[in-house]
Length: 303
Length: 303
Image 1 (tube, each protein chain N blue to C red):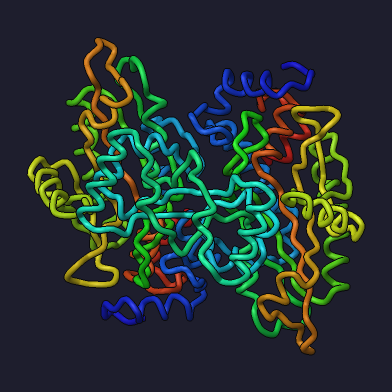
Image 2 (cartoon, chains in turn brown, green):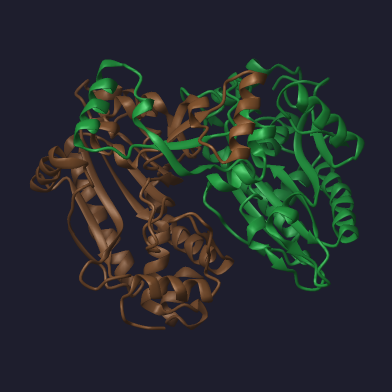
């Protein structure tokens, strides 16, 4: 495959190889069996790497309470990425009106009302309320894997509206949590570089909305609250973030009353591997046929 | 555990055993590690059972094009179950208005607009457009596993807003497709009864909306287009459907121009295992601790 970096060309190659299956949704393509096998094998490698840590595994659906999105300030910071779920609560007459409008190709969304849920923007969100109250000595460590939604339709194969994240979430004293985040930043780099990926880490910021968001982003960088590991996938100059590390300090623990055993407010941090992006980074780096990948990479993913 | 059938009691037992983790969302609870292990092992058993069939595995995100929901008549039949995804497309001023309303606890959804996606109501939907055009000799067989959304909030542990389905989808000549559906109905029963579940099959209908929907349901039953396999989970008299079989005839193939090699319109059928419901049926039947399940059941799930 080509070692140039071009988004449209990479997309076309992925389709031609059957790795992805086009749909009409921008950033909503299907994944073929080989793509999925790589993704699952990569996730399994991460889980083997983390096995000794004893993380508790929880699984949540890809929806989240509307109230949580409101409470956590998501709509202040990322309104452009949110996905709000609306449904039909009407009677027979209104249902007929809905049918008729759909048949005529007219707009019909004013016949809907909000449900109590929104789409999950990050896999870790549902975990924080579970921590509410006094933590056990040493805090807690949880892992989740889930589909996340962000409304940023794009033809670029690494920018998906719906994608999976493997996350680890640590809650405990500020020192414990910061040391855990620092440790995993090195561990994540070692894991990804060990797969032959040209991975590098850097301070980063979230895509806060608007002018006020620019200040938030600057503050986040100055406090070194977010790091990312990046690999060139569709551009050599602007590598793609495939793993991110977030130290939330008291953002979640303050909202949900999460306290250390001695009563002091706890801190949280999380790290997430973007599973589709890790898969795409491997395909870009080693080629579209995993059977031809370097033996030491194959040995790690298909042990 | 109790062998009475009571929804609230079963829910409480599942929570106490750590099998499920409550959230504030009705029908949106978290799943513990033991619950997930059963679910994944059951899915793996189904996939081993089906391995000889050579189904092509595809994976789609849990969103679907709004246009597809409109085209397929979902809003005529099930408007009350639909999940429409809305997001914010505004400017700085409008974003400030949104923030302020959220902070004041006021309604804010009129500041959103529709996106091009809705939530996936059944795992098979994204597969049909992939079949468009002339089919190969003998048709095609595809398998998918995905999170499905239906807006029916409930405290009943088997009725979830968001749940996973393992589906197989067959497309080909009418005879081929009907025979495949009939064969799998027996195969599904054998598989589920082989796990010690008191499973029985019957003709069924979809939950069509309103008075017109009653006629649709009657017609669906008379034509024997839908079957379900049921197991008592929260009620002995009203057992829970854990697997369903749908013969769509030309519903999808007509819309997407799916034709047999000779040019005649093809038929489709699908079958789906409700993975959470299968897991809950196993827990209700054999008890809340899988380590204590009958040896022959364990041998099949943990081979």
